[in-house]
Each structure stands twice: as structure tokens, then as C-alpha cells.
Image (cartoon, one colour):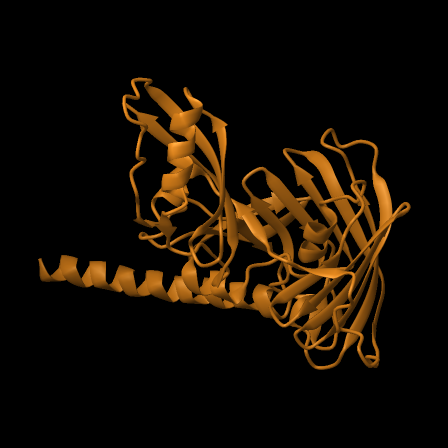
Length: 322
């Protein structure tokens, strides 16, 4: 019995040591292999990009120009005849009103160019597991991740590293991100080329054409009058968001109401957990729908966190009237 206990204890220690080593490797991907982690000197980059339609055809070509200094960033997106300027000031994001033809995937593409790997918040939360995988003819160590037992999600992305422990691929559900071998820039490893596919259908590509240090100009990161404060919004399933409810008010149905059925609502929840907008998608009766809207406006949720920061959420709420 004692021998069995010692064997189990030794295995547990070995497993924790392996997890720690894998966590260290992911930390490298979250810091060294991240352009947005460069804070030694202000830098400027020019990126050529192409974004495909849902079928992987008809690419829209453009450029993304980035100026970054510490926690401040200015980005100019130019695609065909459409442009958008974005300023990141600390944790606040300001944007100019973009043309309807502006490719909505462009800001997401920039995020992957700057930081395709995990964030430090994610590294601290996940439980890593090592797998070996062949990617583009190269054998890579792929660290698959799963959240802790008390987390809502059941699986996470897999980050694939080369022999130098640099990020070369990311697999996240049906999305695949591939990165070229990195080059050194201010003690960081930067991949100049990146491609993104979804279910093997091309989504976007990007190539860093220029990467240099520069001297910021006065007011470069100050939002202008034509900019608005942008609130990041994530779409969360109704089942997941239901687990975050801390206060629930039942609908006050109209007197004599006899209609039964389901009321489907589209709900926007602010960063403080309070619904800011509630709209009826479908209802068996308009009066019942209105009663459900009035009730849900009084609900309170735990703020939904993305990388440790509360974000605005769009979700659905289904209320069954019996």
C-alpha cells in the first residue's frame, strides 16, 4: 500500500513538473513571440494584407500601418477605397466611423499578427498537455490546453512550437493560424508572414513589409473629434451566459393572458453585468414579449471577462411561458 502511494505521489510530482515546463514554454509564446509585448522602444510597422470572403475567394487587398509606444497604439487600415483609424489609449479604444465596405476581419487579423500566441492571463489559467504534430511537413511540439475544472469552457486552443520554442501554428476549433519562422526584433521573435484558414478555407494572410523603431510625434495617440469610443463586444451562447446570472426577475404577464410558448430575446449586456438593450426576436404574443423585455432589463449578470477584462456581451435569452 505504501509503495503504491509513493508511486502515485511521484507520478503527481512528475506531472506537475511537466505542466510547469509547458507553462514556461507558453510564457515564451506570450511574451518573446509577441510584437505587442515590445516595450523597449516605440516601433512602426507596415503590413500588406488580404482578406477573403466566406468561400475563400475574392480577396480584398490592403495595408495596415501601426505605430506603437508603450500601451498606446495608432493604426491606419486602408482597403481599396475604405479607411479606418483606430487609437488604443491604455485600455480604451477609439475609432473613426468605418465605411460599410470596410472588411470587418481586418482588426482581428492585426491582433493575430501582433499576438498569435496565448496571453499571460491565459497561461496562468490553463492546464497544458503536450502532443506532437506534423504541420506543413515540420514536426512541432503542440501544447494543447484545457481550462481548469471550474471553468465554463471544455477545450482550448493548441499552440505549436518549433525546436527553438517559437510559435509556428495555432489550432483553435476550426481555425488554423500558420506563422513563418520568426526574425529577431528588439529582443523579440517576430514572424513576418501569417495565414489564417477556417475549416481549410482561406480567411486572411498578412506580411510585415516594414518593421522599425521611430520617434512618436506630439498628439499622435490623442483621439480626434471624429472618433468614437469603441466598446469590444463578444457573442456568447445563451447557455453559457445563463450561468452568470446573479439576479433574475420573472415576467409580470398581462392579466388574463392565456397564450403559452417561448419568447426569444436578443440581449446586450454591459461591462457591469446589466443589460443595456433587450429586443424581441420571436414571441407568441406581443404583450407577453413586452413583459419579458421589462423583466430581463432588471436582470444582473456577473461581468463576462476576456483576458481578465470585462467586455460587452451579445447573447440570446429564451423564456418559456407555461
